[in-house]
Length: 109
Ligand SMILES: [Zn+2]
Image (tube, rainbow, N blue to C red; front, side):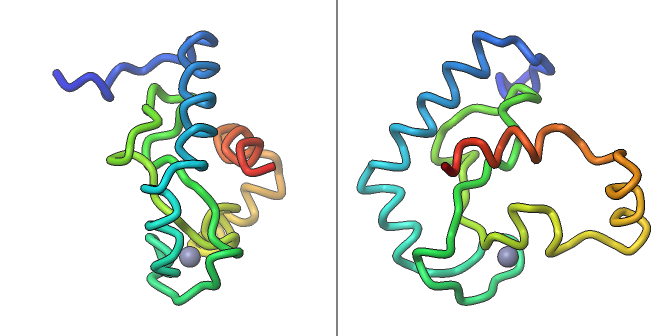
């Protein structure tokens, strides 16, 4: 079907798409997204400096670093704390969190 459906944690794919994400962060397109100052997930107004880059389909799950798969979101949503239910938070503390969140945050620094 669509190319983004490929479910793979292919290291070469991950490395390539993270490099693309880094390049995209320096682009005029991304600056335009950030300058709007709105989190894609919670819709809150956030200072541009507080917005982070998030992949809708995580790179580790075969997601691509394309404008259609990348959105600006606030730190809370990027960390997964903005929209977790209490049950999910407990699972998170027990170590049941998905590894993708950790991997995504590596891109930020
Ligand atoms: Zn948010």
